[in-house]
Image (cartoon, rainbow, N blue to C red):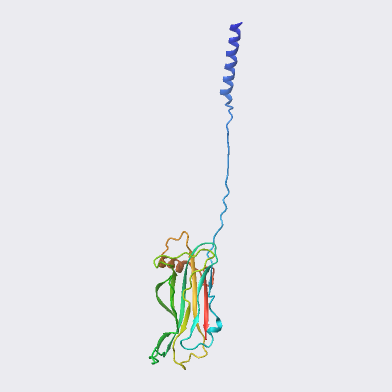
Length: 225
C-alpha cells in the first residue's frame, strides 16, 4: 500500500509540472500612470505713465519755464521685464540768452532740457531724426552695467522729473507753434534672455520688437505750445 501511494504522488507531481511548462500561465503585477502638465503662456506688456504731467502747464509757455513731466514704465504683463525709454527733444535754429542776459549767436538748439535720474543709463550716442534729437536709456537701477528687472505689476523709476524750456529770444517764429517732446518705452522679457547688459538687450529689441504702439512698446508725445 505504501508503494502504491508513493507512486501515485509522483505521477501527479509530474503531470502538474508538465502543464505549467506547456502553458506558462503565470500571474504578474502591473501598473500604469500618466501626467497632464498645463502651461500658461506669459506676456510682456507695458504702460507708459506720466502721473505728474499736467497738459495745461504745456500751453503758452515762456522762456526758462520748468514743467513737471515724469515718464515711468508700468509692467502690466505677466513676466519680469527689462525696460528702455527713448526721448525725442525738438530743436530749432534760434537765438538764446545766457545766464548774464547776453544774447548768443543763432544756433541749432534743443528747445527743452532735462536731468536724467539715477537708475537710467544712456545707450549709444544722440541720434538726429528730422527736427528731433533722440536719446536712448536703459533702466539699470543701482548698476550701470546690468539691467534692472521690473517685476510684473511694478513701476520703474522716472526717467526725469521735469523739462525746462530754452531761454530763447522772442520773435523767432516759435510763437503760437506746437513743439512735441516724444517719449517711447520698450520692454523685453528678463527670464531666459541671453544677455542682461544694456547694449546687448537693446540690440535684440531693435532686431525683434514691433512698432511702439504695439504690445511691447508705447509712445507718448507731449505738445508744448
